[in-house]
Amino acid sequence: MHRIVQPRDEKGQAMTEFAVVLPVVALVLFAIVQFGIAFNNYLTLTDAVRRGARTAAVSRQTGAGSPAAVAAVNASATDLQLSKLAVTVSSTWQAGDDVTVTATYPYSISLFGLVVKSGSLKSSTTERVE
Image 1 (cartoon, one colour):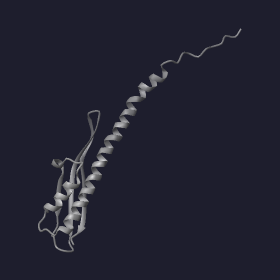
Image 2: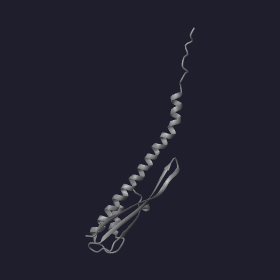
Image 3: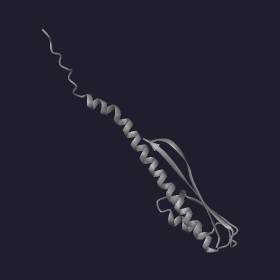
Image 4: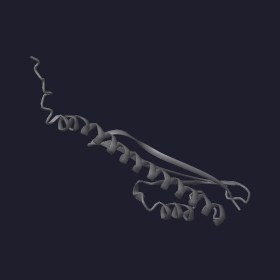
């Protein structure tokens, strides 16, 4: 006589696998979201600096730290906290010379309350004064 062996009852196996994999998937998902926020801040900063440099190049105001260029950067950086945004404008303000606008903004990538990476985003644009 042969005895037919029934496979063991596998109820709960999928739930156990899900419980093991869920923290890893959640960690990866939150890391992607945090990186996306930091990347969006960098793109906003880069666009704001470009706009500030263009404003500085055509405004023909004398002196470093042109208020028009700084105001243009602040106006374009709507997604960023302006209190944390540092903007510098440097140029000799002569026609044909270059004007450089640089801005920095802090970032922090944290997962479940633990800061994984932090630092400053920096963007700089140079344009010729018209």
